[in-house]
Image (cartoon, rainbow, N blue to C red; front, side, top):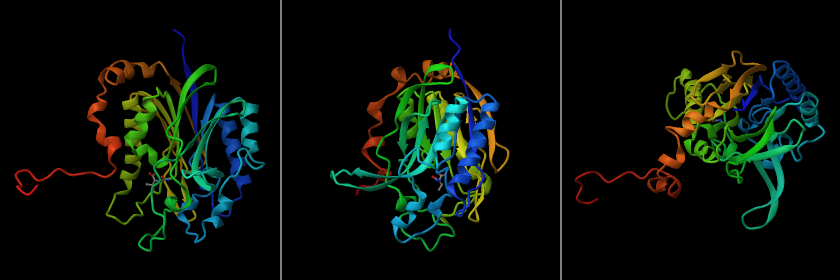
Length: 331
Ligand code: CDV
């Protein structure tokens, strides 16, 4: 049997302050790609919104005033060095960024639209696949109760590309099934399963997650923030028999702390590499895709064991609908 393996890297980024120009961030990212390549990596994953500060923490009354944080072309003059590095080093990469496009909406009207986006880029510098974040956390209006805002629902529309998977050459392999999710998506088993149903073998995902729960909806112990992130990624990999390369933006950015703990996870749900700093850092691991077979042919053999006829509420409703109280004659 052919050995199908790929060396992947998380290129974790330390903080990018509000005043830091894109060119500085891109230069840091190119250095991380070089370090990853020197350690054998054939595919490098960057965080969510990797080119700028995590700007949804800043409230701007006019959404257009946030446009400086958005990319209107990819690559652009400023991001071209990433694509050049991919070609020079022969590595593919995953990049999260804020995307502004003129695109028709559901009514057919073309207008400026903004998405929290990620792309997969081949070692030849071609964009293979685009994904737009589906699960946007936070709120759309300024919330005076919060110490730090989380305005993703203000600055972005819900992604309209679904959860696509592509089979593409990567490293020495003629085809790997590659998919993406972005940050909060990792907490939703539905997102993983849609990727799993397309036979995804490697999920690239980036995140910006504050160390503190800023929602003020109740106490959440600090250590549980990292635990819940890892729990979600490990469960997603195990239940869909795939690898994940999950990359953080880390450290104190604009006075707000983001946890690092970037990880690479195998189809058994085990963490096989983990970042140890809250700064620019490369971690690598080898993904042997033969490991996906066990889950796919036994407990998570979808064709044999899934029961979609029992899953209607998953796509038929949004919020929970509780059952009536047992024995209540009025119910
Ligand atoms: N960028 C994110 O999507 N962050 C969320 C926070 C707000 C909880 C996350 O799920 O990590």
